[in-house]
Image (cartoon, rainbow, N blue to C red; front, side, top):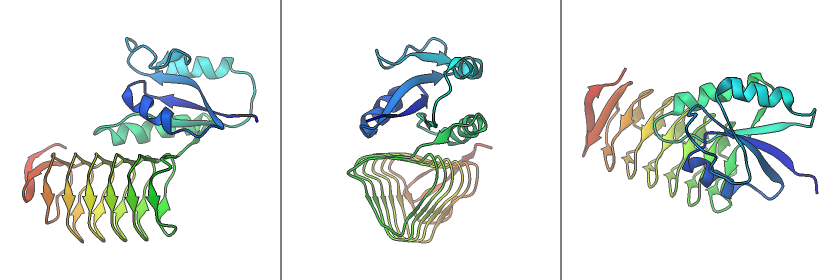
Length: 217
């Protein structure tokens, strides 16, 4: 069986996690990263550096069928994931959503491009997930929630029904989001916090209940 080919942008442990979730018919052929001191996380896959390294690798590549990519960057770097995704799409690559077999996803959920859904995730009915969102281990998202592009939900985050998480937000480990609340774009909510009411855009918030502590943007 001829395998499809994929590259990763990002050479840290997120890449290791994602490779283990790839189906057998997809082969990882290269890793790229902006950190020139970072070795490849895989002995059988070469690493290249920066946009110039990518463009040189791509220009030397024999003409082949479709090439896929995943942006293997976690943490509060959702904006970067989206920017890198746009760069790779402009070069003709296609975003590949990596979804663990153990994830439970409602057939009425809508999943964007380049999404990463790790083991133990549960996604309820009519949930919307934007491009390049990352749902980490054991995240639970209840009915009709909206998760925008570049969002990162860290391990153990729970979202009650009809809540909204705007672009590039990070909810760190164990955050609980109450029903019908909104977290504004680019905000970060600290570990173990409980979000009982709306969080404005561009702030660091934490606590029980979570409140804005300082402006980030």
